[in-house]
Length: 177
Length: 218
Image (tube, rainbow over all chains, first blue to last red; front, side):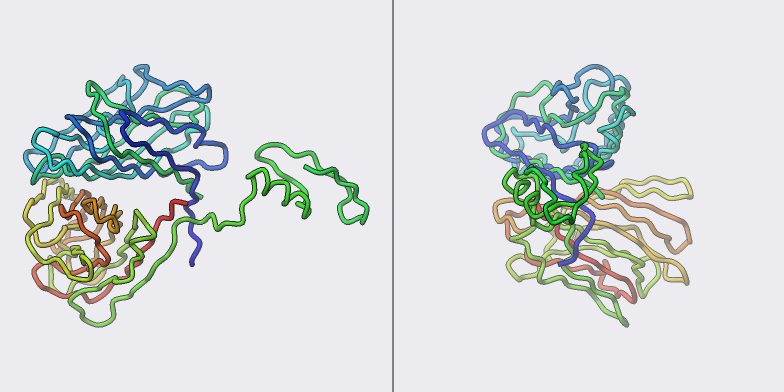
């Protein structure tokens, strides 16, 4: 088996959960991290957001984030989502889920985090694919930045204005060598 | 860590270790202690694992990956390099094998964005496609090609849909430099055990290097 340059760090998952925190996954060992994220089995309308956690295990929810994303929806014109001074790094980390019209089949994506464990801004890119309702899917591609000098050690997947319970959210974190 | 007596004289002194700046030599006892503490592993830490590389030789209608180890990997990465099409302005696409049977129905969905150096950005999407689009139309003159990466999710999970995200760059037949990114799905809960790379519309490939990787999660 060939050895590549992606090194597994840790994974976290939950069943019957509304959010997921992954702590102590970023360190001085890597400059760049890849996060694989899956979400499935929601019981109400929902969208998942992503925030960063600092080295005191505090979730950063101040208006310190900027982001720009494109939702590539098959049902309508693509949506540009962009905010300066946001409270989240990504406002749709895996698209969004329309439970009431839903195939309810969830989605998956990859997030790259750059330089979290330094006293510099933390940058990120995100891409995902999801079946947000019956017969329709949405892609998502975006960028985000945390414009503080906090040392970042983890991340928090949560919901903005929704409280759906998920039967499956799982995240795996890799260091990029 | 055990005390180092240096009784055999192999290690002149025990170095002072600091996080992130390890120095010196690990003795057998050190490794044993670190293993017990869960701070040393004998596992292969490289988790981007090459499954197979195929090179297009001559003129072919498709390239199939039929041993994708879908029960081992939840996420696959497919790299398509220097993909050449026999005919001008044709594009490479994806189909999946479900339990060994190729899915050719108009069941795939995708939502992509094409951007060109000529200044146009275009939405391309479908909810009833016979394949997943992963790149724009590509020219077949000298030097023209497409180059793409695709992440593939949940292929081996029979309870979940199979998702993709992709990004490509290349030159179309104008020729104009382009990029295309987007997402796709086979909206069927099934076991996908193979991947076909083909040219939309039944045309042929004449070149390219295709590498499939698995991303191990343990």
